[in-house]
Image 1 (cartoon, rainbow, N blue to C red):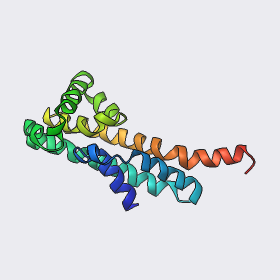
Image 2: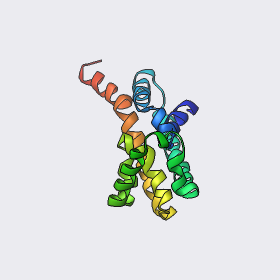
Image 3: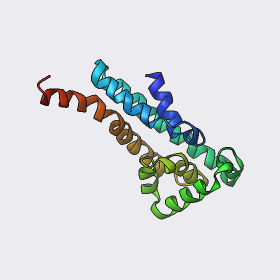
Length: 156
């Protein structure tokens, strides 16, 4: 469970997410659940919690450092990512925080932008928690339950 937490946390944390693409690994973990008899619930909770805390810390980095984030590595090497994240957030607001988790490039920067823009924490956390739960389930469930379902269809 700690490895799953770290993978989801790294995938969701601004800065690390740009360098730490763990989505494919988490999809593989779902397949391991389905094949290896791991219990889905603890793995799911570890992934959802990791994603939740990664975005929460990203929000606070943006809230605390504001526009100085632009000068931090690796954002400073790819400033257009922050600009696009800001446009996405400005257009969609709380829904941008929610849906941003499901789009790789935005996953890393939308929580950061929400903090920079001082989005009310209550609204941010509502979108953060609900999207983390759905994101973790969406990554793990196909492998965890799909393989068992397919085996049942094939008579296995």
